Image 1 (cartoon, one colour):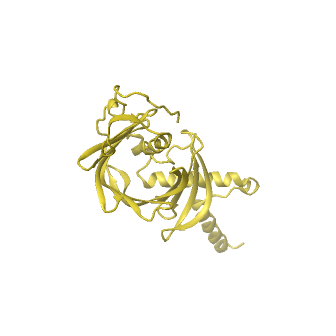
Image 2 (tube, one colour):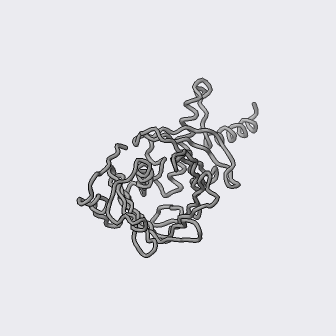
Image 3 (cartoon, helix red, strand yellow):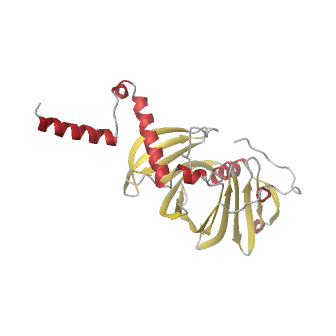
Length: 265
């Protein structure tokens, strides 16, 4: 082999290594290759969103904006999240403030627009949704330590963009499907199955308008489409506060309420 040909071959080899080193063992054990690809995608996603150290420094997060609930109604809301696993959502409807909260074990709500002005336990379905909302890091962050299982299902076109499709199985067995933009590694869409009116329905959430706040990249607009619902619903983030002071008792169900329902998640 001439030096020139060898130089060209070496450049091509090094270029391939820079993109992805294929070990001979990958051909014998395909699961090794998939695990490596998953780790690369997760790392790219985390780096795109600000990096591991930036997110590890987040203990509380407060988002505020407007929720589109359909029929032309846009409600102001405040969503508060606190590590580990706490969430409180407040929104104003018909001049009264509704509350949905989860302290990591107990979920409760106050729904004055339905005439329910005293705290009461969430249903099992509401608890599972609240547990997902309490996650301020995203499904892929430190997924192994959190007991999440991730599988790579291939690539698909989503909203006109090439995307990697990942299946995430949560510790309780619930499944999510995460689509990462092949170019940016940011979430394009997350799918879940929700039980609504006694029937399992597929819910798709599209993530748009990613903006940086204190080094963290956060989607400022989410569009949710539910199977069987002709309308899409939007969740718009107008303000982000990183690490605001949030007391633990903001997430606790008031002691005056009875019949607290607990869920091990």
